[in-house]
Length: 159
Image 1 (cartoon, rainbow, N blue to C red):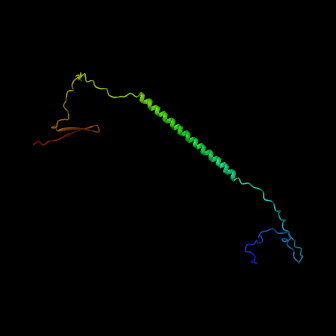
Image 2: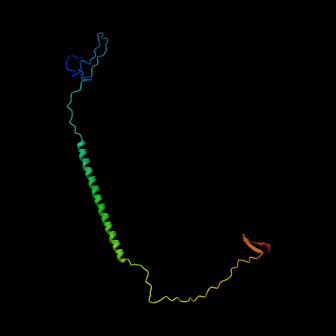
Image 3: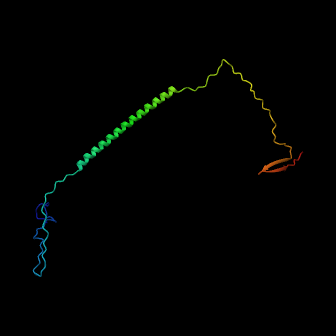
């Protein structure tokens, strides 16, 4: 479609409005009773409605929400710091009170002006006894196993 004009020209729209006369189909010259169909009437051009995007409103609401979240976070942080500071002061005061009440539990100093004189015990002395392991020279040994007594006779060869 080059007509010598500029290369940027408006071409006819592909899907444009059709006039009612261009869409009427004629029955032709045969006249055999074919029905003529008409296209539906074209819609009128309407003025576009004014519309409003809510992105600006949403941005304002989001900014307000972010501000409230940040404010709440800051307040919670301050409260936590104050609670920690108060807890630290309470603990320090408790430590001070414990230190005041604490009594040293050192050992008493010995009395050097009175020397230690041990007293003799009133209990009787322990008398030593010979162990009864049995005689080494014995030739008979007894053993108890499962509530039964066994006797062993050992023969020693004396040299």
